[in-house]
Length: 124
View 1 (cartoon, rainbow, N blue to C red):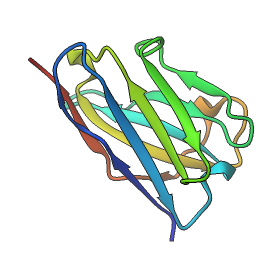
View 2: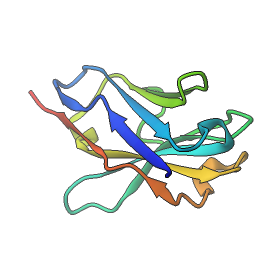
View 3: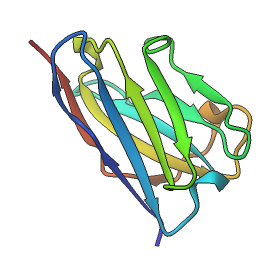
View 4: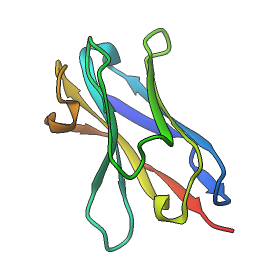
């Protein structure tokens, strides 16, 4: 059974950092594009970052460029999102999702397997 579980959420002050981890079970992540998405109350789902399968090509939303870094650890079957210089507008439920065999243009991949999400709250 394909399953994704996010971890690492929490409360942080503006300017702080958090690292999210997406752990897969039931399949091997390196055959999938992995995307991070977020949704705040009353706001549409937003793509944050993604990494393509096999080639590791990454994509970032303009709102997080220079602050977030996505990476893959195939040995641990995880994808991480390092988030630095967090802002109140980053507050949202962050979820990871997987799309099979999608290399280029991971932000356009058909993500079909989703985790439950983890809450990030940026507040002083």
